[in-house]
Length: 159
Image (cartoon, rainbow, N blue to C red; front, top):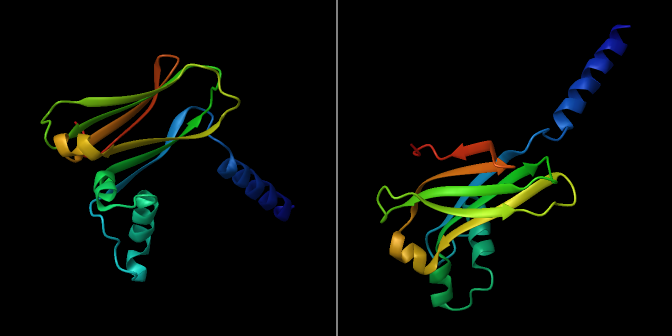
């Protein structure tokens, strides 16, 4: 009897831990800065940074192309629980040379999507824009479903 109860409890816990979110939400936000054109050393300690730099520099053949790719890269993963409703993903941010001015980038999904599931957005701050405005200092990401705020995530310096 105790074994059956233990198995039932463990299977219930397993089912909960493997289930998808029930609402639209942000699952992860990764900031992958690229601040130099040369790759880090082959040391195992630098392996993640080296892999990131190789990924972001892939296809940049000249020094000028590599310099234009330097900057801030943000990768957002979110769960789309309601694919029939319009969704708006908004990134608010400040850059070093813009002072307190809050800028924004928006991605909208107005058409119904095939099914609920994990989605990914990329926000890049590189090239001429980065040269004029500087590095991203603070950020906040909002997801709106059908005009209502569903989830939000921000950097620790955001006010």
